[in-house]
Length: 361
Image (tube, rainbow, N blue to C red; front, side, top):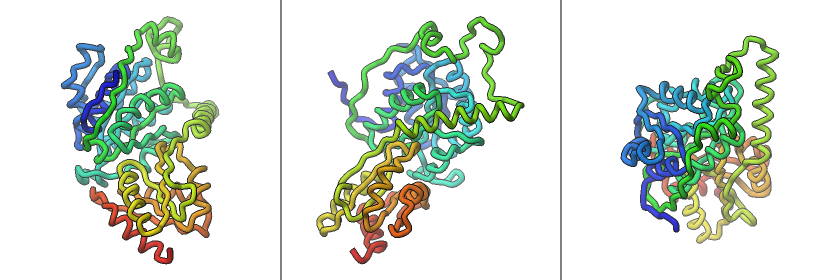
């Protein structure tokens, strides 16, 4: 029987983590994602499932606890918002280099700096390009509903363990804070230590067999060996790009124009498209669900046959760079509309910007 609740996106995410069979959460409070930790503390899963819930002394400490837990084959995650995730970047790079599965939640707020506690999508570059040092990628999932905040927890971990790489759930403050009906997933049992040893032989579990079996390091002083490590990472990323692209396409079969948007702003664009249709203007929408790997093929296919493309984001223009690279056609005008400082545009504002960009429809 389905269990249906009315809750915030952040709350749904926390419930989903418990039900997935998570071993540990390590985080530090920051608006607009503090309800993740608050919900975990209220639910007290350490009494029911044995899950560890720990408020670390800082975001730096939290990501290194995730690093340690992931190295042991545990199902672990952290959550934060933009400035806090910035502090975690060195640890994220270490987790990627260690080829470890872990889940990172970023409920974005306006910046740069401490900025505002209002919503933003300005961490797109940080997530999709690898905000830390080195050549690595994060599987990046962008939810646009409370249900997806719930569902993408399991999906993020499934992909992270499948490819032994960290995944990030890149939400904006609107999705984290809004309330909707959500269907919660069934409970999965946590793996026992013996099951981890059997199913995750790469894990550092204290088993016998010499020092190298019990120590994880990402340091390699021989550049040729380090290059081979990097080539292995890149082979994994190519595999992810081949198999894990996800997107939602709406009204794209015979559209004259295309909008590309992710997260909460994609929902607002749907209303814009409805208003435009009343005036005889056919606009399609592509919503990337995986920001990395980016849905280049579908955007190139639709973008190559429309009169113009508008990329809508709550930032100064970040995803538009990937859209331009995907379409790669100078004859198709590609424009951007976004609000900054935590302001979320209305459907009418987006339509006004669209009409100003494409006056000769």
